[in-house]
Amino acid sequence: MFKKYKKYGKLSDRDLGMMTIGLAIGSLAMLLVTVWILGYVFSLVLSRL
Image 1: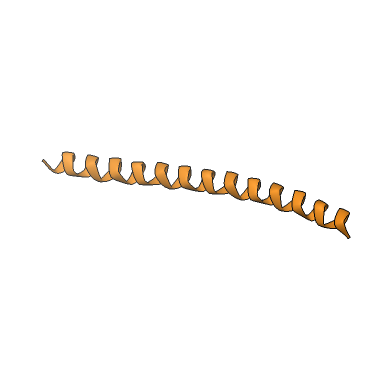
Image 2: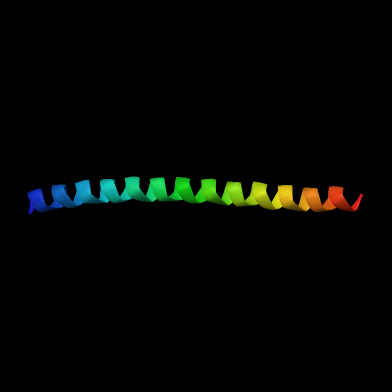
């Protein structure tokens, strides 16, 4: 029973790592999209001036 619990703990640690990596990639993608949208809007405003 204790061994099984230890194994489960290791699995959850790995899952936590995967979740952290996923969140980091997701936030980076959101940042890139935000920068792209801001640049697009900025270029539109400049072209109208």
